[in-house]
Image (cartoon, rainbow, N blue to C red; front, top):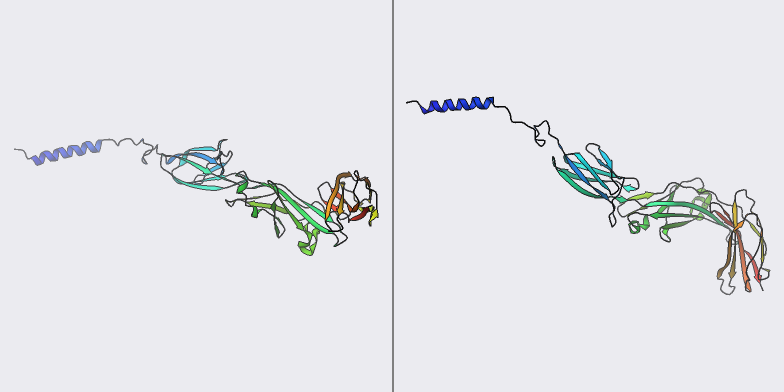
Length: 330
């Protein structure tokens, strides 16, 4: 009788021979690291939206995968798609001019799909920034100089996103906080006495910039701007002056400032309540030609004490105002 052990050995040898001769199974699965078709990638898609309702898509945002440097601009609805993004932990960097750059990290499985939404912060935008200077002469205490800085500050994420206390103008080493006046308009009046040497001329040639921040700590800055001119010469009132008596429609006469650049005149008449000292603007006329030297008040003033001034205003808005010329209407 044949030994069963021999049969087992023969069958085992045969199995070994058959197994050893069998070819390897094909490795064509792209998820199989042994496959020549293996791709260590996945798909990432999403949208870049604004911070405020209704969360509209933001176009032309550059979305970059930090790991391989590939990037693309978002479509008109803020959408983007990377069909061959590297798998694993990746970082998406979003950036656009006048927006705060941001980074989103996510995990992309091999062959997986990830859809995401990013909200990007629009920076405050400063426009129309300008500075105009003013000299106002007085019998007492003398000439007062100031510079008025104005600008429009807006934010696509909404007016409430702007932190008013951060809106400021910087010139050289000095900064001055600006105040919202109406709507998006901000202003600050810089008294010349607060400047080095108490001299407004210190501002000439120095760069001004305005900055504003929002609640996401994004900051927008204006383009640099400069003082265009400080008008020192002024027009000089010649009549009526020194409490001269006039009729109710006085003729205002003055001498020109003797400058070569273009300018216009503004005339003002102020009523003085002699019992209280209260001054009230009674009349103003602007845009008078620089060739003018006389003007007839077009109305009829009631009896009282008045003074009038003549202001020179150049094409940039800089001005120089004369001292107060007083007169009486009996």
